[in-house]
Amino acid sequence: MSVELKGITVHYPGAPTPVLDGYDLFVPSRTSTALMGPSGAGKSTALAVAGLLLRPGAGEVLIDGRLRTVEDAPTALGGEIAWILQSVNLLPRRSALDNVVLPALARGRRRSEVEDHATELLHEVGITDPHQPARTLSGGQAQRVGVARALLGAPTVLIADEPTANLDLTTGRQIAELILRLSSAATVLMATHDPQVAAMADHTAVITQPAETGGARVAP
Ligand SMILES: Nc1ncnc2c1ncn2[C@@H]1O[C@H](COP(=O)(O)OP(=O)(O)OP(=O)(O)O)[C@@H](O)[C@H]1O
Image (cartoon, rainbow, N blue to C red; front, side):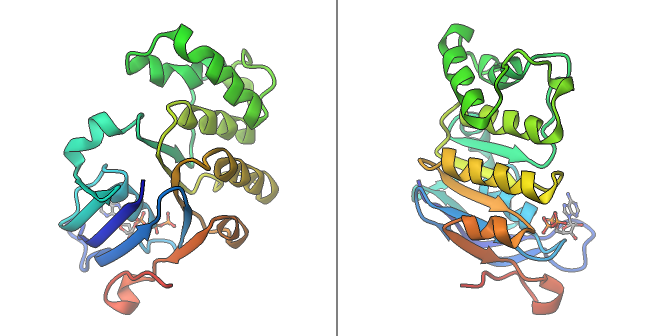
């Protein structure tokens, strides 16, 4: 499914200027785009709009050519749209496997329906013991569990907001490679500050500092 932002404007209350001002982005179906740009340029804001978590002041979000709004979030999130964040927020006393399946159980799936697939995904991301308690995982291992959790619902749109930011460069790049390889059937939008991570994606879009340009723009 393609993801398109058309003329998106977001002006946070109290801010002197909009963080996004007529922002356009097109991510073709089943491709990945790395979103780059200086801190504060609006990458997370653009992802929140694309992921239907933030209603823009103006503009449209089209997924697979269909107009979508934040009202669609309850059905889309965890199903067709999945997120991977910088901080993984695992339940520390539960196992890696529990952390992968719990969101699916909360959405009404039976454990028996998802457990085999979750175990397989954990294996694919390099977690050899699915019963390892989350509190004993390293940061990199925890993010691997986060990747498996995001992929369990077979999302068609995967949004990753600086998924490697809390990791050392090498681990971060391994995680980015995993995300892009395992989500090849999805359309991926990933914010990153690491040019090597960005280079792994099919395309790069740069959001420039609005204060300098009068509005965020995408570089070709
Ligand atoms: N909920 C909010 N309310 C008010 N201002 C906000 C809010 N969220 C973000 N901002 C401001 O909007 C600007 C863009 O923030 P955003 O997090 O989208 O940037 P970013 O490019 O993702 O930055 P970073 O690389 O540091 O994560 C910043 O100046 C930030 O302080």
